[in-house]
Amino acid sequence: MAEYINAGIDQANRDGAALILITMDTPGGLDTSMRSIIEHMLDSPVPVVVYVSPSGARAASAGFFILLAADVAAMAPGTHAGAASPIAAIAGYPVTLDETMKNKILNDATAYLRSYASRRGRNVELAETAIIDAKAFTEREAVEGKLVDLVEPSREALLATLDGRTIQRFDGRTTTIALKNPPVVPIDMTLRQRFLARIVEPDAFFILLLVGALGLYTEFTHPGMVLPGVVGAIAALLALYAMHILPVNATGLLLLALAVVLFLLEAKYTSHGVLGTGGVIAMFLGALMLVRSPITAGGVSMGVALGATLPFAALTVFLMRLVIHSRTWAPQTGVEEMKRQVGVARSAIVPRSSPDQPGLVFVRGELWRADSKVAIPIGTRVRVVGVDGLTLHVEPLE
Image (cartoon, rainbow, N blue to C red):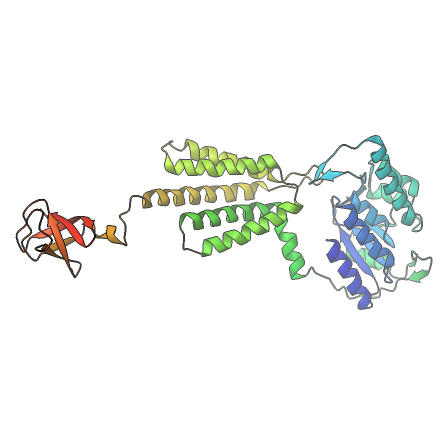
């Protein structure tokens, strides 16, 4: 996201835009990404407006810092901002710090906010309470407390209000915004950014995990199919990439592994559906617990968890039953394939024929030496019951 915002600011400056409008709705994010975005905003020759929208949106945590760094900070009705206390976290989960380290982080965050919010004419004392006391503010409280500049119901109303407005830039210069019927040019994410943003979503991560497991399992149990193995390997690697970023819960992963084991046992043993049902429940609960961050409250959605669990269970049980059933199939290649083949005796076969006078049988278009435990007249149909080198052991076909 920081890459996307920064690239958009740079492009707008190259194109000579009159204004940069960033619409925001965020629960927060990494400190490093936040500082990178703010740095680009403060250095931008083109004025930057941050607009918390639509109604119901928020600028929480790192979003609060970004909102106050804008040349013009605006909010839509029914939005809120604040709750910007920094949280030390590992893999998305908060960790407890000693008092000295906690004070160090708080003091660093408040000093960083003061360094630019005061130059923007914001109410620094009130803004600091969002960090120290984790306070949050509605749009009315924010504009009355001089944290933001405007409350506007829509983008069009915001641009109309800004037309002709004189603002003070971060370097102290003043500029007048001219927006007479301005063409609005959206800057979309690149294909790479959209792809990376998509695969690190919890729903996509869960599906990639299942596709990877199913593809690799299919390839291992049905060697030579190739395509399932290729797709499974790619999906598994993408899932590992997403796992590096998302706050993955170990209990969720263990429940998913348990579900797979239960599905395999369901295919092998008769449990009247108990093992399969247990697998479905374990996978469903594992999906809901797989990604759960106390910071963002993001996770796999209920619909995706249920919609992916049932097909995965059915496919896994079906493939496992194919594997088990295939073990009972007769070999289709090699010497063992000759067993149970039917032929015709081309000479009389006497028990324990001598090597220099073997019996002969015609099997599958080929003439073979043959031996039998009983006498077999010429022209009798025979069945192959064993193979010893180039000699077939046969018996009369009744």
